[in-house]
Amino acid sequence: MTDPKLRVLISAERIHARIRELGEQISRDYPEGRLHMICILKGACFFLTDLARAMKRDVYVDFMGISTYGKGKTTSGEVKVTKDLDISLEGSDVLIVEDIVDSGVTLNYLMHVLEQRRPKSIRIAALLDKPERRLRPVHASYVGFQIPDEFVVGYGLDYAEQYRNLDDICVLESSAPAAG
Image (tube, rainbow, N blue to C red; front, side, top):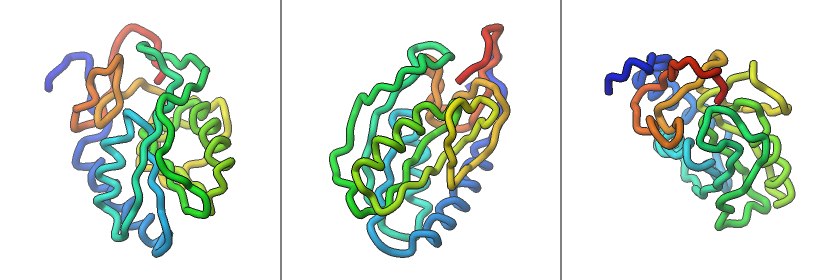
């Protein structure tokens, strides 16, 4: 897809190579037991699929919908659960799989919600980390790439539900102030 508003930040090749490394690392860190991978919809579904295939062990997969964004580039700051889990997490290792750690508002909220469900452990795997934007403390145990404060799309990340299907992660250039 050629779009003059898009600049490739991370190529598909680099993404897939890094996900293979993360899959191997997570497999070593969790050699046995129940590992529940919780995909945060919608953006993380691409990352979850490739990460699960890169793992050398069985995993359980479920999905949560959490939203702090509307249709624009800035967060509303209000967290809303749009889809909850179908499984119990009690006594299980949990790996939250997220596309991007940005302000930390969503993941900070989600960690508190999931801790109430008494898992054995909770960690975060994020494809992207944008630490400059952090408003709430969040630690991702597994990070694909640290990126600058630019609005990115592709490989699951969107702008108003567009660009998710791009193979690369791209910066969406515009005259509007960057957020997301």
